[in-house]
Length: 296
Length: 220
Image 1 (tube, rainbow over the protein chains, first blue to last red):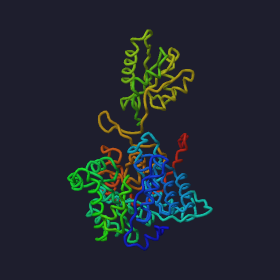
Image 2: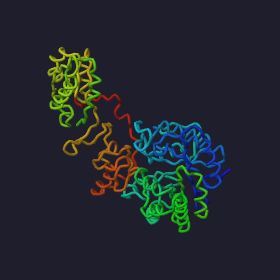
Image 3: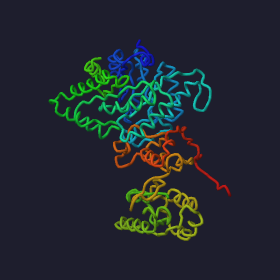
């Protein structure tokens, strides 16, 4: 049994989480392989919630699989697909089955996904969602009714250190901290100077919250350029795209692993923040290699 | 005002299939201003429909009329009352409210919409209009520098931008559109009122207007 994530947040010097992206379909074999491979290597596995608005196996279902296989899941909940009733119900279900870490997200727009004609929900935003989880933690629902059987979630949120302009993002970030979160997982970071700048702001706002820098694995120059165009909140600097482009044919992925390892090593050695969140997007089996490249 | 766009000709033709005598009814208010369903557009659509049917054995016979405000019963009756008995069906070039007003008055006749009503907005430049108001029934503009996040933010967020904002403060879903929260931030900053954005706003009351909406004037 892995140590609980909230315990890791309290006791570990450098926290490592990884993303587990659910499959499209009901065949859970590949996810189970990833869970087995990663559960002992990271402090928790984040499960995305219809990531990029592409319909997949549910975050909650995958979290249950992780739990059943002895791992520590973080349930990602977005505001895109569920209203306040559905979100609260899912949270009660999650908690009753031992899933008690939740990452509160707005969610990507429907327009970037594969069901573009769907009705976007966004009944709540991410800050309101954090407050909602606190309300449940206090033993009540959003309507003020008592819960029979309370919950106790460890609450996380996201931040975008590379946003341009950063001002509006920092206002929102401050609101998330004010609402009360135990951990922050940032969107993809490639520029460590930018991350340092963000951390200076963040430490002034809240010294206690644990901040994990988001590391997205690059698998090639084309993919990096594609992400810049198409994946919300990701900005890969040109020098990394050039480095990937110059790698010998067929070695783009190894170069990407090396870059990710290098970033993590520097973040850890220079104590820039409290840990990292590795997003290998479809290459979860490469996470151990990234950890090795980082010296972890 | 209400912004609308005309449906594709093919879709309109399909709706009218089987009818030979129709009335095309425009409106002189919002849809005239947004170039969708005024007197001019009634003329254009009527000509297109006649031309399209000219090869058929019995071509389409069309009456044209334009009501001052198609969402007002008396005006509709005044302008269309004597024409409707002469036709089999009515093609309304009003907004959704106009179409339904006409349909309610002339219950015995099928009424078809020639427009898609899109939003409450204003002119952006010549021939282009932008959405400004979601008619949510609980106006937030006092807290957001006069810029509506309910409709101008793609996700209708109330507590600041999402993490998907593109470089330069553009919207996640469209690099041509400004992020509403970046606009709000800049305006409040300019006015020295950024504290308004730092406040937490509770989840929106989506029952501020109980749908279907019905309001009464305070003096009525």
